[in-house]
Image (cartoon, rainbow, N blue to C red; front, top):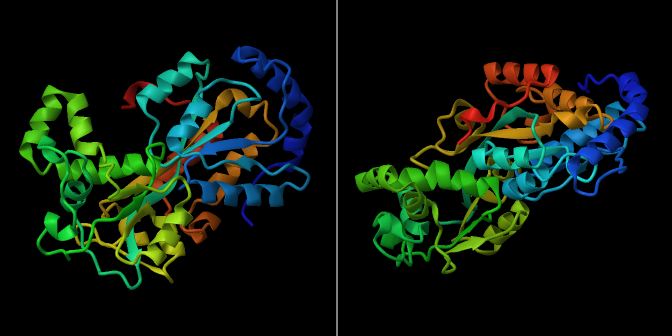
Length: 356
């Protein structure tokens, strides 16, 4: 089991950690003074959740006596709100994210005293589209997905498409039914950025709109219809898998790892003729490929017993032959893994100037 964590160092630091965490709580100004916590707490992405829990298991196995980290699936957006609320024992140490932190979130963190944030890309994922094994065999493009799901396609009025054939004559006359992530999810953000916007931009007028009115462009290109054709299925991706089994004509949208884990009941829906596979996602050939991140409060590193060791466990297991890829995560390219490993070692803080 490859988890290079110095057990003695972790335990030796515990007494100092409790004192340090109390100090963190004092700084937060949120009633956290005097609070302590002796286990790691992470919140955020449902896509990163299974990988974070896998690391938690490896961490505990390598460090008998340490409490298991608390990993919560709140969605990327919800996790960022919790993470950015302050420094101290009552606030999480880590935010798991299936997209990069937004500039607005970075600013929210800073406003609440969360000023030294460590950003680590832990791997890659694909925004997979899937159907039941006995599904109709859809073949989609970003343009088709946009025209099927947009609330106001190209700004020309409410979406009236009822069937996939209404959108594209090559598709079957089957009612549009898509089970996907909620607005708080990083997977939903990825759907908007990687698929819906790309489809929207097939109309040259949308590029002009972006230059004239960014807000109107975002609403036009990324707002999803609310008439029942798109079903918000919460942060539980397994629920989408179950719904596809019950409704073979529906399409599900979730992280690639869930497709990989459920290949016995689901099949991939190609996007632009490219199927979501380990190879196409890792090389970026697949249109829905996206990086996965964790964000860590540097102020909590010395205060929370084992937090540095937890990061080390992530880094030790994200290689192509590591434990995380065996759980369905796609390893990041070698140069990205090297840079991330150096960030974990040096605890380099994020420069927010390049965030969007």
